[in-house]
Length: 237
Image 1 (cartoon, rainbow, N blue to C red):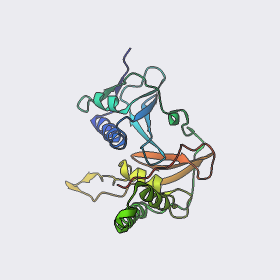
Image 2 (cartoon, rainbow, N blue to C red; image 1 turned 45 degrees about the vertical axis):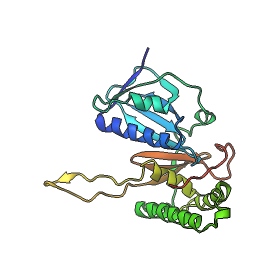
Image 3 (cartoon, rainbow, N blue to C red; image 1 turned 90 degrees about the horizontal axis):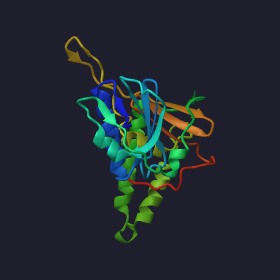
């Protein structure tokens, strides 16, 4: 029997479609794992080249009648999203890549100190992207190879953010997936207030770190811990 997801509103459907589209930008064969319960569905993805997991929670208008935990094609799920009807059809399951079997814990998350403010977080990503581009452009033609660019990328994106152990690549992933976009302010007295930076928080549970924003979360194994997600590959914006 085909499972249909009925979202809380068209905005939830549009946000899910945008998230899936960004994952597919990095990997046309991307898969996502869906876990639904009660009034929401969590969509887990692994954006290629960032070495993190991305989590987007979508509110449902109609709770899923039973437990739903399945890995599907991100492209097929995107094709099924009907923004006007605020719904989507769950595609048939696929054999998931290894990361789908190693998800972050559901509970036990504790907030960590040391994370800069939202504007400083976005500025750190912008400065790092600019540094990557400048160093890449400065390479002599004979050294402008994939391996050399990866080396520069690993050096930049492995740096930590503020007084935390969170690598910049996790923040880069959040920015690239639209998780750090400003929060639109409510319209008051017929005039719109300026958009506010998206609030961010850093949490930890066991061997995992999680960067949380209103639009989604980025989770990753703590640096130096066991059970990583594989070799890091780096790609500029």
